[in-house]
Image (cartoon, rainbow, N blue to C red; front, side):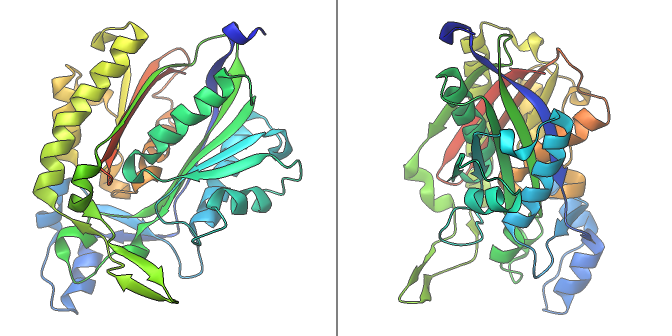
Length: 329
């Protein structure tokens, strides 16, 4: 394969959800013991979320990432030691360092010394990681790349704040990208605007062995909603333009699973019927960087997404970051 002919294709997908599934009613009952009032109807009407999964106390982002990776590798027909790069998108790493990617490498039993690093772009993280992996492959530097989105957002939620604690869940999703002579990833578009960093953040850090600031997630819901609706349509059109395709070429839209109203608004603006959008937010909640690969794996394994179809993934996250990747299965 000459360098000019190198492309990257998705050859395997995998996902993992922790065993503890929490319905809206269960969460409402738990919050009631804290004097926080909410209901299944209130949550569904505003978000479309009906349930989410929470990690066990001894379960980490790297644990879930490893399980998703094993399933993606199995579908791809690869041994873990055939990987030459691991990229993990996460905002909830196990530690400040080492990276979650290095922990996953060890848990997969990889001994070949392949490169491993994390990407932090919050809910846009998986799109950022996919684009990064693709460019490494295009450059001829790597052949088999494992890309993972993994989050334990339940650890950074303030369960005294009903506007945020009902939104998020935990989980992991993974894909294996491989160098190919046939186009797979067709285009990508990534952006950020740090002037909006205050509308979605965890404004705390470790200082002298203690948390300085706030270690809980903060979100200005209305500001995030307005910005998300605006940038998601724009970045999707940018990715299409780069690929030289019309919006009618999109077979499946997999937006970051944050809020059903944002998702349906994006699909409508792209002229796509809702049945061409993969929706898992109702059962998974918002799993941040894990949400897109989780939804992708669900739709691949249930047969909706078929080889040769064009898939658009896109997300927005704290930073403020946003991005889209268009690829052919």
